[in-house]
Image (tube, rainbow, N blue to C red; front, side):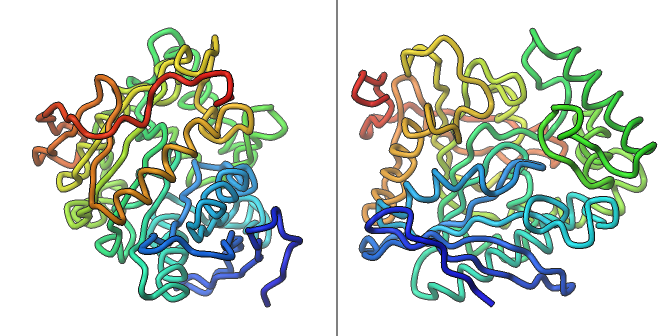
Length: 347
């Protein structure tokens, strides 16, 4: 049964929803619905980062709704409000989140707004899930915020070994001992289901499907990524330890048929000393990105335009292996600039 939350603002209705995945698992989410939907606007599904509860994306979803974009957030199984019988009892690997949970959310959005094009805003590891969804070919626009594949050598050089020891050495040991990764107790983000934690910890080689088990689970999924044909806006932050621009390039090599506009944002662009991986969703820094994301989604929906930044490129994907070894062919664009450095009024 759906519940109605108090309106977050005068022009946005927030509604709790339960979505049943193909295997019967209940996925919990929220619709952020504008009172007036922008003409020709897409319906937006937010793919959260790995283990990050959907509530952290609520301010961004409200912002998009206030711009006329109906937006759906949801928690993957084993996370946030989709905890089920408990994180220790839920099987939730990468393929579960992608093929079951994200697919269910995508299907719910298409049924709620059957006449609207479908857009996805994915943060962090959520970018890896899109191509594995059963109806990924229905997506027409994609925004990737700090995308990465979890491969340790893509972490920022300064933090690489610390992150490797944390996520690829300590995490699998703790996960096997406890039965899940207790991120909250360790002050390392949210709790992670066992299967997903071990999937992430196992990203020690460039290829997504490295072991025999991974090939069994992932190779048929990776074959689908080429079916995702969409315009994409890809934003990276230069001081992001998890997902610097190099990590985005590896992620994009999995998607050979995206029409990509890619940009890197520096802390100085926001008059800040530091931004980091969560700057896309923090209330203090997020509006800089949300304003530009909503403008890109709305302009591309009515004009089929590609927007760029100073020094940004519109990138034609050259098909590469699903191991992350694709290459880029970059063509400078002269289109409208949404990423001028912010002024005090922007902050």
